[in-house]
Length: 112
Image (tube, rainbow, N blue to C red; front, top):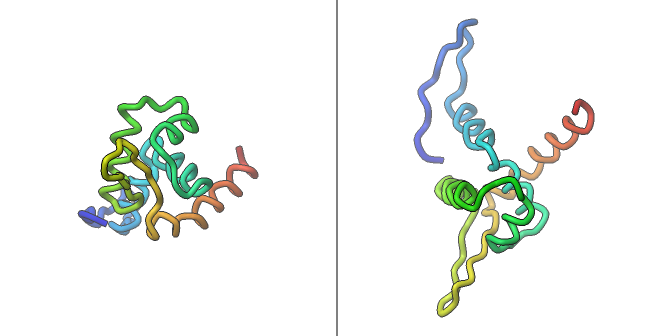
């Protein structure tokens, strides 16, 4: 992952791991978790399919988030020569988030 945050000390004196902080900043960004979840359910999707699954996210923001996740190497954008078709899929790095998402589901089923 690009750029690691500096190790920060909280008010209690605890130090937050830069990698942990960076991961939560990426996963915690609005819509990113839902995009990852949708792509875990359907391995390859077009933009319109992702937008249809996450209806409250504007197209502009969805484009931004997809680009950010591509920059983080969580998803890959595939284009086709001679066509306007574009597909999105999780990379290996992105697919390895499956147990994390499963744990979030279990937690939310219990507490939400």
